[in-house]
Image (cartoon, rainbow, N blue to C red; front, top):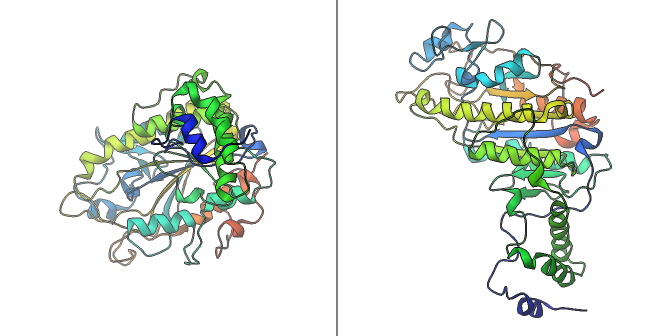
Amino acid sequence: MTINRRRFLQVSGLATLPLLNSRLLLAADGASGIGNGQDVIVCVFQRGGADGMSMVPPLFDGRYFDLRPTIAIPENGDSAALDLDGNYGLHPSMASLKPFYDDGRMAVIHATGLTHETHSHFDAQDIMERADVDEQDLFDGWLGRYVGSATADNASAFRAVGVGGAIQRSLLGMVTPVGIQSIDSFSLNIPGEKNAELLELLEQLYAENSVLDLQSRQAISSIRSLADIDTGSIQPDNGAEYPASEFGTEFNELATLIKADIGVQVGCVDIGGWDHHDNANQRMPGLLADFSDTLAAFMTDMGDRMDNITIVSMSEFGRRAFENASGGTDHGHGNVMLAMGNGVNGGQVFADWPGLQQSDLVFNGDLANTTDYRAVLSELLINRTGLEAPEVIFPGFELMGEQGIFLPKA
């Protein structure tokens, strides 16, 4: 049987409907188990420029309190920072992550981030996700390059997954990522009883070898792969409870895909709302609680699977060292990254602290960045995935010695 596009529309009765759900992006065929011997890398992007010095305040540096007389996280009292190592503290709204730090499964990297001088949200996010600090006009992202270069025998349709409303730029590359907002909506945008018939018709419709034909068949294959799994039976384990927030729900979806053992190799989830130019002490606690409670729930849910999963968080830049007149902070530079998992050398704050004296600050008032974020990511990929050539993933960057943030894969 052959079918042309006009005949397909007549048969399906869908001439006025979008054929593919807008939340579906394309993928390759195949499947394999968790990490395929490598860690699953989960990247969390805090979009908006998170205030790293509120997340992890440098309590030992008296200038921190001088520069932030009304918004500094105090050392004592009901709203005091949670002590990490006698020098740095953790924002009290992040209390759910403290046990993971204490038992060595979470590390903090301070005074780190993008080395580019831009203070533009769009530019900084774009440069950071592409890892194109030297402006080499790279199209693909750092995770996309990693998945494309990985030697593991993993042809899964779900090697690279972006959960949320849009595919993250860091995932773009030779392996086309899958975008999922919810597993239930990952299907043709048609009534359920017609799905099987129309999937077959679509395969006939796109039976040639053009780019559109090939990718359409790949999309159909990914729909079939997920449809074969009873994802509804995969529930949070170990008493984990995800927050009923967008971020919590999206992480629960990613957890389901990982536990389904369909070959997820990298996953990205974003959390926005970090651009706190005003009223930071009123606006930040709830967001930090959502961020922390979600990551804690994921770690709990994954249990022993965290032997083969590593989470890393980042934001496009930090905030100014000093507070502004509105009780907030403006766009800054140096920031905080978190690393979580059983393969993390945790219970430590890794920092080459630059100081907060006026002569120490950069760009007229920003915390200096003493650790390039690419150094953190390079060490992650080397130790947890066996990557031998990080320069392929981060062109123009040379790793000058590791900090010991990540344990070598056994």
